[in-house]
Length: 344
Image (cartoon, rainbow, N blue to C red; front, side, top):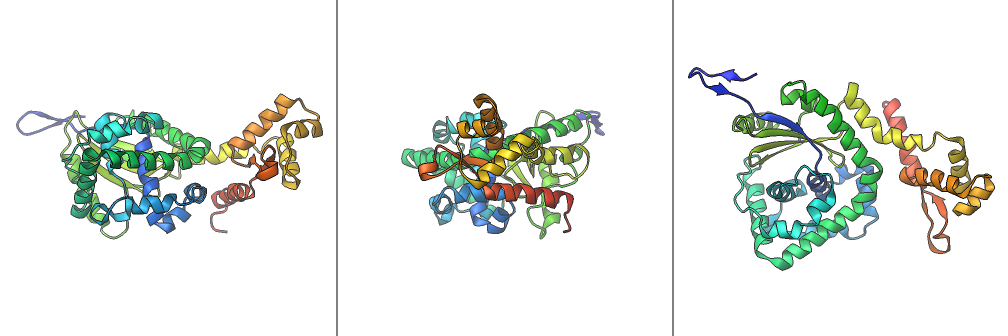
């Protein structure tokens, strides 16, 4: 409902929108090497970096001391994506495919009132360098591309579903016309406990600067390790971990990736195949013969187990056969245990 000011003019607040963002996902992932505790809290990120030796070191050493930000954040990705109109895209090609050209046209003076002065100065320095140096742009795009290559299997297996589910239910809440804080849910951005009152005040100030044609964007992120808020032109972006609430639709959104992976184990044939693969690497034809099913049927069972991240190709002489990923199975069962028995 619009507010009527004393001068008789309508004072409408900013609109609320809900969307996922590859740029936000990448920003969170870029910051994790400098926060080991947060990485341990996010097994998929830990595994992504473990499978890409040297990637964390490349990220930590890419920018010089004057361009370093607190928590290792790479908010310039959000700035660049917003500038190019692809901030709210879940298609990585829309961002990474044109990132070099976006960097060449990088804005050099965004307000960034959400950031502490040292971080704002560092981000502006990054944008200026990306705009002015073609070699740096190419190195930057290569780094972003390599990071996404490491993240993509986890994104496709779990992340996309979690974000899309969270966006869907938050959108339904937003359509009721409630304040954006109700859309964000109970967990507002909590970058750290210290100074939380100052952060709340800053968020309210940034919101007050937005006009009726501008927006507060709630952005659930799979790779997030907490909450965030960023001041962008015409936009206050509120980042949150996808499915952060523990009741109603929020809980269902949070459980979507786990449920999808558990579904892969809900068939007795697939469980038997998993048992066989735990004993020895086997090919598709060998499994089809062992379980007396057609080869396409065996392939479909294995496809579901692959998508759940439970089986993968072997190494060396067994590279054409399937093996069980014991760590993934342990994480899956551990995730179920933490969900239903959190205090044990």
